[in-house]
Amino acid sequence: MTTKIGIRGLMLVMLAAVACGAGAQPAKPKREAYQASVVNAGDIVPPRVVPPCRPGRCPFAGQQVTVLQVRSDKGGVLGELKEEFEAATGARLTLVQLTHQEFFPTFISDLTHRSGKYDAAIAGAWWLGELVAGNYIIPYDKYHQDPRFPAWDIDDVLPGPRALLRYGGKKYMVANDHDGQVLYYRRDLFDDPQHQAAFKQQYGYALAVPTTWARFRDAAEYFNGKDLNGDGAPDHGLSMHLKVGAQGMFHFMSFSAPFVIGPANPRHYWFDPQTMKPLIESPGHVRALKALVELVRFGPKDMLGWDLGKSWDHFLAGRAALSFTWGDLGALAQDKGSQVKGKVGTAHLPGSDEYYAIAQQRWIKTEAPNRVGNTTGGSWAGVISRDSKVPQATYYLLALMAHKAKSVVYATRGWDGIDAGRHYHFLPPDGSGQLDAYLKAGWHEADVRDYTKAYFEDFNNPLQLPYLRIPGAFSYWQALDVHLAEAAAGQLSPEAALKATAVDFEEITISLGRERQRRAYRDSLGL
Image (cartoon, rainbow, N blue to C red; front, top):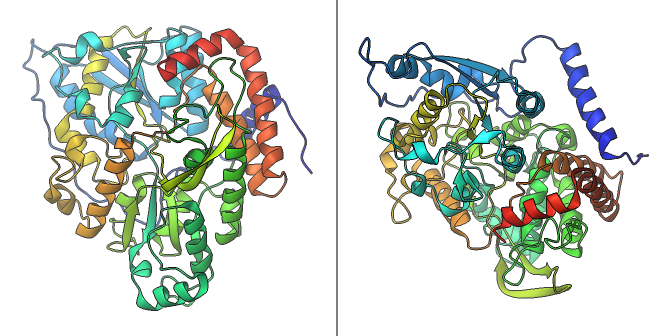
């Protein structure tokens, strides 16, 4: 039995969960919820690209830069950069690391109270509308081509993720991570003649990389219950993470896109841009959620309580035939401890045979599968607080992290959470990337060729899932997250779950001001 709660109740529940967790487990966790545990990180490191400054000539001598970020072992990439940055500038770098649940509330509290504790944050792209609307962060346009700072080129970023770096015609996020979800499948299983014959006998068509979610469903059903890693135990058709508060709602966004977005409906997904009425309970969204809920049957029962790391671990241990998630998984599959290195195929996400054009209120069939690109996820990147007393030193740090020589290495590693998205990350003929960079990082050649091709196709797809970047996006997505979990657990029907989501969306919109939200939403869509 479930109880309908308003958005204030929802926020209280989420905050209470964070508080209870902090009280029950005061020690630092061994593994964050977004990190895999069955593989070990490689030892490849990026080159130094800026020399130490000479005494008396350090550009930011004596300045202190404080950056807020999600908790990572040894400070992650910024911890890796600390010594180089300090030697080149004379400044000092302090990293404040928090869990995902603590991160946004802490940063927005500092900004709204004008405390100025943090000069920058490695922010999620969905925060941007709120940060810009509140005049909480500053653009870096005047610094971007300034030779005093490490050089990087925003035009190196592919169109999909590049759009997230700007807002209202100004540059706010300094390129770093480039998120999007793709399909992962066990190439060895799909190429196995015995599986091919058995699948065709059962389903009447050849086993192949799924191009529609219906065929993905069949493949997941077929492989579910079979021993996929040779240990004699039954394994699963797919692996997903569905725990509330662990970013599980992103699965639905990517999955549902081709049921809603199409050539006749390239933008109407979240809200009606004229009225700000939520569209989340449209027939396309409902059909997608029904299909997604059915897929839950082909994964472990524990999946409902899994965080991202546990879902990745299951695939990396060879215990699932399929997954759809971020670029981290493809890179983690190459690390020591992975049971699937050399066996991981990657492809653009599947599509649908028809989509619901919301403005026309009708289903439209397509000749080829309707496949929609996405930049689903955080695309975590640095933003500079308006209250920073050292904005130039802060930009220097973020630009150093964005440097090509650094980014090439980051994109090959799984542990740092930084995914590919720039021209030089992709192999020819798609980009200018070098296969040798991936091979030195331990990649299997077949795996990397599939991986870079899939992401290049995703980020260049002219049809893209609209990314929600308006004030309140954090709250809208929390509401969606809760109700999707209710549907996945069978507590609510897909129709009821999305109806409840629409009600909460309305409440959030009313509380923030409908006209203000309408203007922000139209601006975010470029209307």
